Image (cartoon, rainbow over the protein chains, first blue to last red):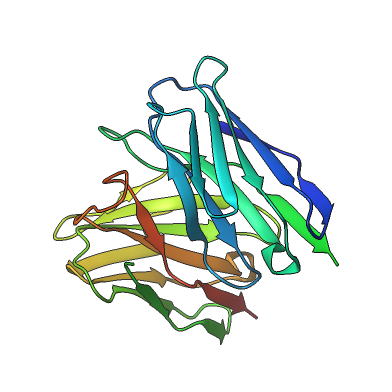
Amino acid sequence: QQQVKQSPQSLIVQKGGISIINCAYENTAFDYFPWYQQFPGKGPALLIAIRPDVSEKKEGRFTISFNKSAKQFSLHIMDSQPGDSATYFCAASRQTGANNLFFGTGTRLTVIP
Amino acid sequence: GAVVSQHPSWVICKSGTSVKIECRSLDFQATTMFWYRQFPKQSLMLMATSNEGSKATYEQGVEKDKFLINHASLTLSTLTVTSAHPEDSSFYICSARDPRGGGISYNEQFFGPGTRLTVL
């Protein structure tokens, strides 16, 4: 059972455009939602994360939007650049108890010049 | 930020041999480390949680006798793939939880660069 569902599977965006990746979860006990960026042959790197007490978090060109009632969260990459081309994973976990990270299936982003 | 290293970055071995992969937290002490497996173009699959000084907790379906995990110190966890077979070929990634916090969650995990295992 996939705890976190992610879409789209792949995304092609023009340079300067906005990239949007969506995730949904079922377990209402989740209270930590990070996004990871992974380049080919490398480990994932934490990009940005949010807790459910806020609806939006922005760091540079990256913004997380969080909708607690809908159990959805999304990553927005503003002014997308070719260097942003990578695979992006959303994840979710609990702060207490069994706090393993549950990953989405990943989105392969390609930013074309 | 917290840095996690893995060694080796890639390894090729013959079927039937054992391979050891090291995961180190370089600038912090990690009481908990995690081992993941990733197939091409797929997500990360948690294999086991490694706690310093105690036995690892394996996820369902992961053979603990095949994937031996040792977390002997606060900065080092090892994964040994015993009697490796071609189907064990994969990208193995470790992560470590930084107990110092500083982020928005004490559950923030930092990942190593991964180890590509190819079994011939």
